[in-house]
Image (cartoon, rainbow over all chains, first blue to last red):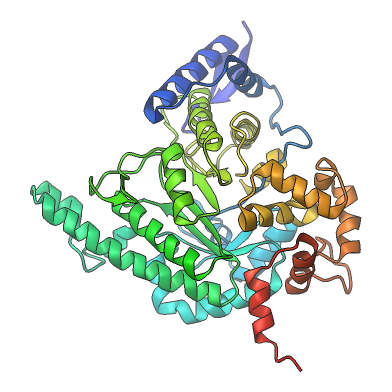
Length: 354
Length: 105
């Protein structure tokens, strides 16, 4: 029986028969449909996914005319930072990197970021960041946003002023944990408004809230409130909200946005709140399971994202960096899987962008 | 990874018309096909042709909306964006900011 070269979710090369790939794709789809409570893919969708995975070429691509928009997160620091993990460690100026990617790598948008890629660390350096934003806005032709993670973890002790809900919950101080999460959320919202509006006043086309809800449901609500205010003050701002994970962790458990408890929401419901708050583009995330095959992971991701795209009124861009939406979880994601996942998201899940 | 996504499914940014389609997704919350159709109509090409480097390279230079190669005197950056505003019938915050910096006589 013919064996096809494919990979596991951690990037290891394995060989599987077409039947095994089909079975894994069906199992991944069923898991995704169950987790997010969304419909299964059609038989044609699954056959298309299996055909793409079994393509014997090293890389694959969409048909001409099926291209999608590429946005990104991390900005020039994906190229510059030497973090010991995922960045390239190239020492050059930020705007030089941005022009290189605009003109050399064909991205449709880009963003300015700072080394410590979170809202809170931008506050004390907001002046120089506004100067850099002004220069970037003058030099780039593609839409140029400023990007930072809300990262509410920085507002808890030992880094921040509020007690850490995880520590409090271990001591069964549940109400106190919720109060601290709410207080941190209020502070984060104020900082989001301050930083994002500072950048808009310096010529940014918009703001990318990356890795939203990394600290759970209270962070998601804080970011939604910040986006709401930014939209009121800058009606023309380009606002992207990209998520941290496929579902919102219920660290608080009961916090609401617009009358809805946000803990546990999956992309098809997350997108509705982001739209309500005023986002223009929603970045959907589906986590990669490293011990499952690429077929299992990418079919699961396509199932969840396809329903999100179908039920959204705003463009949906699938987050497709390392370890999300079918892409294996390693620092140098293999291009055979990246291109296959990219094509599957564009042609099966029908995303508006990546 | 940027390169892999561009090769697999990217519109091409400044090489073609991806930045223009992205602007309509942001400005009017247009979904992909609607944004492509809007931009294609403004460019006077089909939605298939708008991702064709051979067609778009010359058209972008002619429309003065920024080109990816080093063409002397061709607008890029803020000057190209101001021409894109006119082409697409939109306003951009970066251009509004630039206009606010100028002492008009």
